Image (cartoon, rainbow, N blue to C red; front, side, top):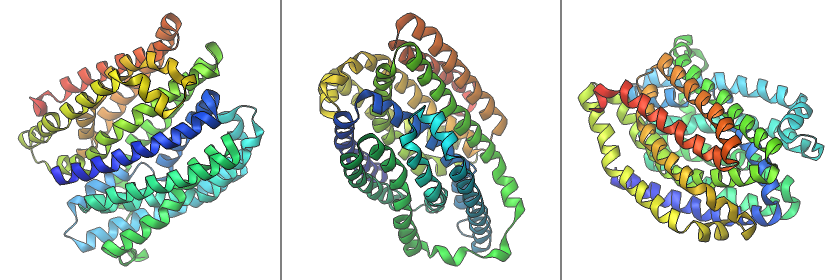
Length: 413
């Protein structure tokens, strides 16, 4: 775990360093209003990526990890999922291409100049799902370092593309860079995976098995509930802020969310790369408890210490990442960081839903959390203005953590 965490720390540090450059360029060339549009596109892409993979990625990790020594079963899993995702991706691309005008209006309002973003997205969409699928396969096979190196290459590639497009096309360029970077990463991912495990040898049309799709369907339902309703709630909250407080205030919240996303990468990557396979293989409450507390003893203290340093240097960080125009974001840090601590405590517990395929419990917990977040946001925004949205975020994550701690009390204690 130390070796994986060390390499992952380097990967996340690199991503944060790249984020310094990318965010600075975004701040200078697109401002808070452009940042809000970037946030809307990112929410939409999160939803679309999960739909294009049918939400299978956690299930792929689980079943690949369980069948890594059985080539026959592995061929069935890889072939079935690959063929299914390929057909789905082509279908979604066609729909997106011919409905690009509709989505432009929904995501960017009356800014018709961004139509090109959805046209390009439609063309490159098939690479999204297949890239995520490939990474899930090698993750399940325990090739942790390869997964992290792909992330590192992706970060560098994303930086170069962002710099070029933002400098050339301003806000439109920033949106295009978000769309194009994952597509280019697919070709690098495919090359590395093929070199590592000879991926193409696993693809056989005659071993397609509907039973595998049935087994994965519960993961699909879990991920799709999260990917459809989650971004929808964030879009709704952001549009509520734009209508009631202004687009610049929505940009400040997106900026805070962007900073949060960077440091949360450290935890989320370690969870998916290291802890999910461990939880999938855990046979009883005792083994599950060991995995939980390994996380709380080694990962959580480092995270909390990092957030403490960040809080006391927040004004400096904002000026480094963005510009002085974004200094009002400093008022959002306390509740956002508190909410992130609660979230990180809950993430390892929530991973158990996927590791043990607890579909119904996950859906109830997820919908409950989104319900609390949305209505708490409306309530607290009315009282505390833009700070209310991060107060609601902290409140929601605390409630979610308490619910999961009670639900998994036997495995946790």
